[in-house]
Length: 384
Image (cartoon, rainbow, N blue to C red; front, side, top):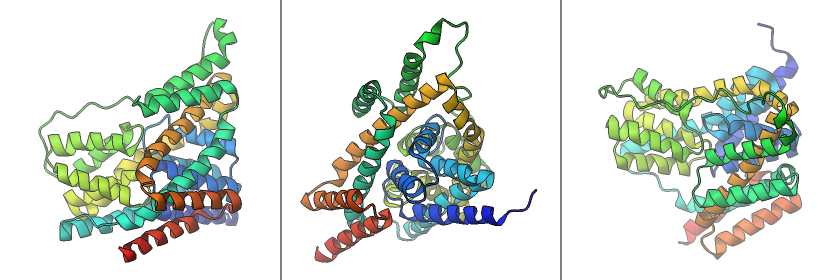
C-alpha cells in the first residue's frame, strides 16, 4: 500500500473535521443534511460544482440506504478516494451514534425519552430556512428547461398526494431519458438506464432466534441493503421483524426509538443504534449501527466511479437529469411537510424568516443559525 502523502493527509483531515461537525449539528433529516453539505462543499469550500453535487444527490437515490449518509460517502470519495469515502462516512455517522447511545442509556435507566421540545422549537424553523435556501439554488441547476420544470411540478404534486418516492424517481428517469433520446429509438439496441439494483429480500421464515449479536448484525445488514427512500421506510421493516416476528421490541419502544431519531442530529438510520442498545447493550448498539450503514459504503464504492461515465452517455445522462429534477421536487415536498410541523405560531414564522433573510443576504455558516434557533428555544423554556 503506497504511503499517505501530506496533501492526502490534509484532505482526509479536512473531511473528518467537516463531517464530524455536520454529523453533530445536522438536525432536520436528510433534506437538511443535503442543504448543509451543499453550503459547505459547493459554496464555502468549492470542492464540487452544483452540477456535480446534483449528480451525486441523484446517484444516492438509485441505491438502497440513507441518502444523506451516502452523499457524505460520495463526497469523501470525490475528495480523497477510497480513504476519503471511509473517513467522510464514518465521521458523519459517529456523532449521532455516540449521542444516541447516551440517550439510550438514559432511557433504559429512567424509563422515559429525554425531552427536547423547547430546543427543537427554535431549531426546526431554522432548518426549514436552510432547506429552502438550498432548494432554490439546486432548482436553478436542475430545472434546465420548461419541460423539466413541469416534470418537477408533477412529481411534487404526486408526492404530496402519497405516490411512492421510488416510483416517482424511476418514472422521472425513464420519461426524461426517452424524451431526450427519442430519435435514437429506431436503433437496434437501447442501453439500460439502470442495472444491478438489488431486489427486496423476503422475510425469514425460521423460528424466532434469541437475541445474539450475529443475528442482530445480519438483520440490520438486511435492512441497510434493501431499504430505499426515507428512514420511515426502515421503520416498517424493523416493526415487521423485531416487533411482530421476533418480539425483541414492543410497539411503545419502537415509537420511542422513532422519537430519538427525530430529536438527534445526523442520520435518521441511527435509530438502529437505539434499538441495538435496547436489545444488547452498548455492543448491540455499535453492531446494529455498523451493520445498517455498511452496505452504503459498498454501494457507493461500486457506483461512484460510474457517475462521470453516466453523465457522458446520452441515455443515462438524461435519466440522471430526470432523477435530479425528481430529487429536488421530492425535497420540496418534504420541506412542505416539515414546514407544516415546524412553523406552528408567529414566533417560529419569524425565526424562519429571519434565518432565510440572513442566508440570502450574508450566507453565514449554518451552524450559527442553528445556534440562534437553539437560543430562541432556550429562551422560550426560561420564559415558560
